[in-house]
Length: 127
Image 1 (cartoon, rainbow, N blue to C red):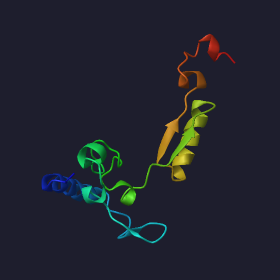
Image 2: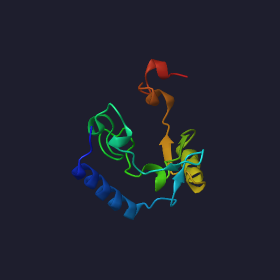
Image 3: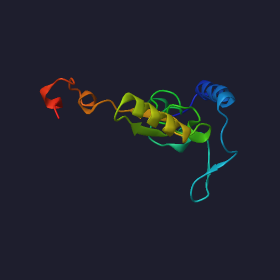
Image 4: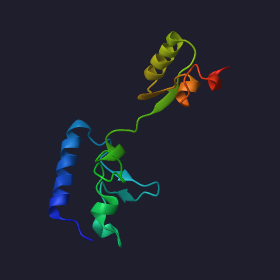
């Protein structure tokens, strides 16, 4: 198992580009026990796996290490609130409130029958 110089260079180039848009939030990251955390752990840190096939780089296929090349070091995860009830006006007011309180994404709930794949006029949707 080895990492090619080309693979590592492609990853580093992706990280550089990404950091321009979303710099890391801190200069250094540590575990709860105080151990420093590197941005990337590579093939030398794993035995018995084929790095590119089984693990890959953060932000690259097969996405086992997340969809962003620096993950949450630069951008926090999306905080979502599940909301959708009452009238359209009341739902709109709720969405606006949640966004004003720092929610960074909304998971919108439609009527329950639609949500569980029934037509709203289906017999199972009654009541």
